[in-house]
Length: 170
Image (cartoon, rainbow, N blue to C red; front, side, top):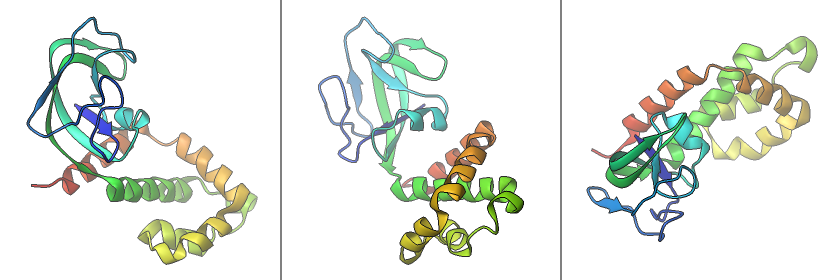
């Protein structure tokens, strides 16, 4: 299962204790989803919706465990491994945006897609960021956001999972 933390590797709730690979954190019950317990999600994209920061953890839940629609809560949480996935998450975001543009950009409505934005999405070249943001402006941003929202959630979950696993320390 997946859990995100801030870069400081601490839990947001409970007692703010530090998450350490190989160690088990424990809380007393009763469990209440979103209120009390140690949380994790089966799917990475679900975990990303709750992410307070870029540090990704692969965890095992144990003890008393309750499963909800998109996340689970438990009395025990063992971090198997984790790492700062900032760059992977940025690359994933750019890839999803570029995919949405390629699938849904309507040149008859919005004109030609700005080349500098395409180049930045493809490469992540920081020297292009400012120009890309300027070129994207309001019409492009709203068109891309709408397209991204309609993209296949499951396929992107698989893509993000592959990217996270490829980037993890061995």
